[in-house]
Image (cartoon, rainbow, N blue to C red; front, side, top):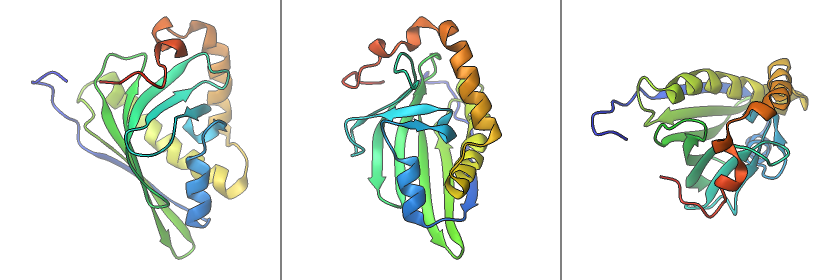
Amino acid sequence: MKPSQQIAEKQIYRVVIEAPIDKVWATFTKSGEVLPFFFGSVLHTTSLAPGAPVRMRTPNGKHTGVVGEVLEFDPPHRYSHTFKFTQLDDPLCIVTYELKSIEGGTEFTLTTTQVPKGTKTEKQMAGGGKIIVSALKHYVETGRYGWVPTCIVWMGKLMGPFTPRKCRSELWPLDKKIE
């Protein structure tokens, strides 16, 4: 990050999911399968232990949209990782997921911090956070993709051939350190 780069305010997205905390946790930390609430990406990692790499890839594995490293992993309450969109040259930021058992279900909170102010990352994270919490709620409670995640997955398939070369997965192997 540039020394003069300002940091955007912390963004918090929260929803109550009518399901037990263990079900919500297991759903959003799955690796190796399509996660509709994460824009149809597939989580690739060597583990979810602190220091492990995180890659969010297209279902066919050809492109990687997000890279980072696990910072905290405390099942079923807290998971935090660094975050960078591969198509952007913006610096890393941090995404933290917190779950709390409450009467009637689970309170799920997604928080973004250290996001560079005025960047494309800030803009994309602002819209993406809302979609993620809403889509996760729908998926956990119904077992089905919602309308928005379905459209996003289809758009991803249509736009795949136009994805920038710098997003190719071979450029983002799990053993590549992200700075």
